[in-house]
Length: 152
Image 1 (tube, rainbow, N blue to C red):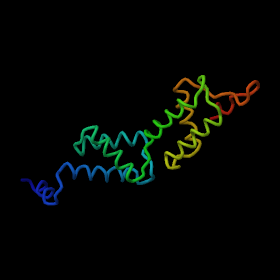
Image 2: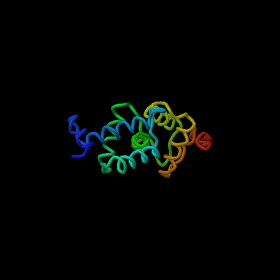
Image 3: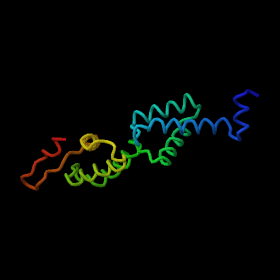
Image 4: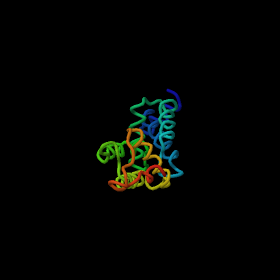
């Protein structure tokens, strides 16, 4: 029995459990600067979980989600999934009103623990709206404009 394996079994922890605990610590360190993990950081963390800690993708994702929930770390990917559902409900005839847009931005800020600045949130939400082939609604029924949406 190797020395490292012997240490793991002495503490009553298998090698897989020890790797998972180390991976949880790795996730926490990755979010130490703030309580937010971006999509790029999430991909890096998952790659490390697979390569360095010997997990498969499902295990690494499960540990990442669990660690994020336990430590109240926001994941941008989860926030954007929730917003996609919200946008499906709010967009009518491929257009979104200014109030609804602001509501979506407020929810995005809440889901990301208020870490992202408002202009960046507005740009990301606008990008999500445009990816769905939608646009801003006029501010008034007849003579209104979409300048509010174009200015973002």
